[in-house]
Image 1 (cartoon, rainbow, N blue to C red):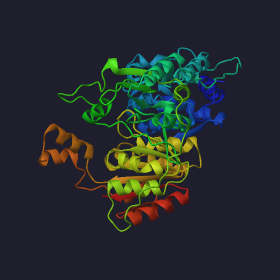
Image 2: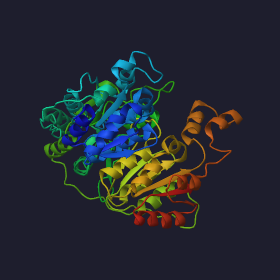
Image 3: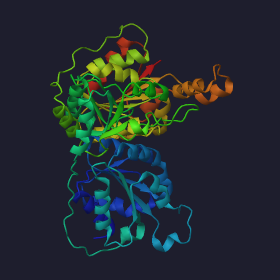
Image 4: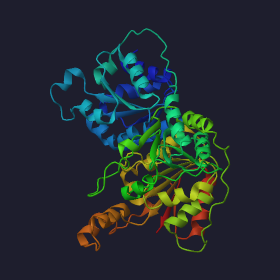
Length: 513
């Protein structure tokens, strides 16, 4: 057995199911080794950012690590943007990066680079294997490092000569247990004291607090006088619909978020870090609430659900009451708008599906409409590096094979990792990609207005519009093997979306705005 075969064996023994891969020359021993163990399923992508984004989506839904395999520093660098998002989502990911053989790297060959320095900003754990016999121990350490209560990215560099080296290895089984979560009852009691004292509290809820049971507990607290709850602005995974409480997301722009939070005596963090503005704007504070007004119910990685439930019991909150109501229906024959898209998609969501949302055009309108939709889960772009939505949907579809995944995607950010369509087609996954095609970077035009630009000149439009030529989404999608249509009215979207979900195969729908 060689080092590469040891790693593949270790991956299976530790429960790794998929390897999202874009290998190169220095990973050929690992590619060959996968023939020895068919329980590890390789998934090829034509861009490393798709591999890392898919691993992120898989980790969020499966709640266990996926494996990525990339080629040297440049290949790993192609995946860094979505590893940044995964780091912010606390997703458990193990990256294996092939490196040059030790006897070759000192000659400074063209693809040599400092891979560890590339890995550290997006990884909580980094190591380079130093012996073939030590590969199982290194890999086990990587899996354990990634699979924490608050998951993280772990990156292991594996020189090619160690992959190819023969090893006489002890057959010691490698096992990793799922991490257990806890919460601090003292923190719960501190919050209860403030509630009993009649203080006005606003909660920002994230992590497992946005699970089904977490939301039910949050809904009980929300019924108390003087108490309000918001979801974090970009949750890693949140349940919606099916009668669950509707926790609005904390506003994105700082002045709006500050206005909301300033109405309360204390801001309670429940599975989120301190609330900080996404960007810095002159004249506005970076902190959305003063430090002396912040309280912590539970940290990221804690058992946020149980903390919320314990608090609800401690303050004798009313019982859970399912949310009543239906999705507002858009006029069938009218042209699509972001608001009507949110309504049409929400009204027709398959029960228990997964929605991957990326883009400002339709993201919040969908969120607003989806409170009364069938029960579903939503993934958002936690780190702000664009190109996450479709790859994350790909990974989610593999985590729950057969379940429908809907990618609600803006046209500009979709282009960053559009190669994901090819992998979705190859794996024949029931992923429906909805492209909001307004042919511009809407968020950048909004930011220009905030900066004081009222009239967009030719230079500004050149950098914020996606025209001349317009992207032919049908041709592009079909070129990657995914059938596609274009719709322009609410009725057309409703018909094609229902047909796409029923087909249980890859489909792309361009929504002309």
